Amino acid sequence: MAIITYIKRVKSSITDVRTEEGNLIRFVRKLSEGTALRILDVGCGYGRNTILLQNLGYTVTGVEANESIVAANIASNRICLTVEQFDKTTDLYDVILMSHIIEHFYPQDLLPFMEHYLDRLRAGGYLIVSAPLNSPYFYDDFDHIRPYSPVGIHMVFGGSNSQVQYYAKNILDLQDIWFRKSPLRFIHFKGRFLNGQHHLRLANILLAVLFRLSFQLIGRTDGWMGLYRKR
Image (tube, rainbow, N blue to C red):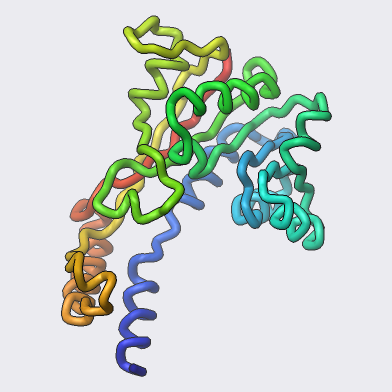
């Protein structure tokens, strides 16, 4: 068991490239240019991105539906509101962050959800969306409804009058985009649930090393982050 635990730690250290956090920092720094930003972190969870941005000196307000998580954030001296509390405020924000949120909605629910928060983004402000793309493990998350691509977001929020069922009143122009890549990996589907994948761990570590050595060229594109400006 000690060997298996060690292998897990080695694999985790190789595959944890943290490129998503680094790109979020790049986007926000690109916007600030020495000026103060008011950032709204929608669906902030326990504040991973909130803490990241606060440590860089930005003013961040989190919004979270789970009241117990809100209480935990407040206990850790982070500004966090329930959805009901947020709806009673009237503040406008320079940046709204939706990190791993949109994939938890059906299209007919996602549109009003995004519009609700985009109404609180000042004209000329920025929306940052981070979301997974479809992959063999997308539906491992019980709450995942469907993956959304940048093309789909543009059809609804780009003001292009595409032939779709939904149209947004808030129009967004894509300013920058980044695609997340992860190492390829072998999956023994039955073994995932019966703890029978030990023989694949070494192979997946080698794939992770190959991912690093190839500067992420040999891997899978499984997520994206878009920077949008509100017209």
